[in-house]
Image (cartoon, rainbow, N blue to C red; front, top):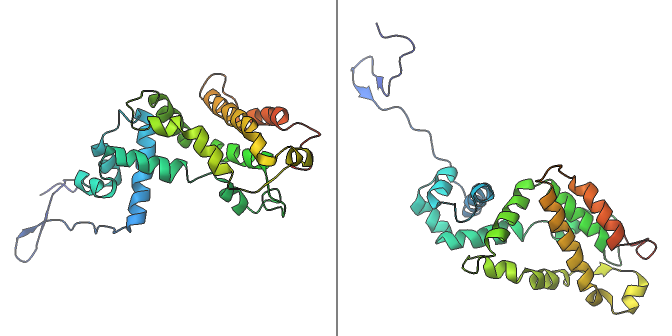
Length: 232
């Protein structure tokens, strides 16, 4: 008698005695957009853990559940995967448009978007996605190498972010408007982003800091009272 817990790779027909292969699970077909999102999600986790240099396309394909050839169909090559990560995962999330979409009063004011309010939103957005912060820090460190495929991206990022922020209508105190408006705030914007980058590093160290609490301290210095009262 065959033990009840014995594993068998196939089944035997009671009538014919012919052994048949077990039925395969049906493959779930994804749209190209769904597959790309899956690739980005898996790659984000792997790069955050191992860096871009430590990433193998086979590990991405295995994580997604497709062949490496199938993966290349979507990304072209490893550099294409990096472009996909930066474009689809980092630069398209936590934007001023996302802040406006929340419907928060400070985001949808008729006179424009609150700058301090947006930065609080961005900090909260990042705090809820530690893997995204880790991805950015790992890539940013690696990209100090001039031969890294993301070197130009990080080198040009201050200009790119500044130009991107200029596309939003911000609600600013009258004295800043009179002095030239948002165009005069580039030093302030850069200090805010530098402070944010530094605070993000601290959440991985001991003692760890709470990103939101840490930003509240910076907020008071960067957007002081009474200048920014009523514009937060």
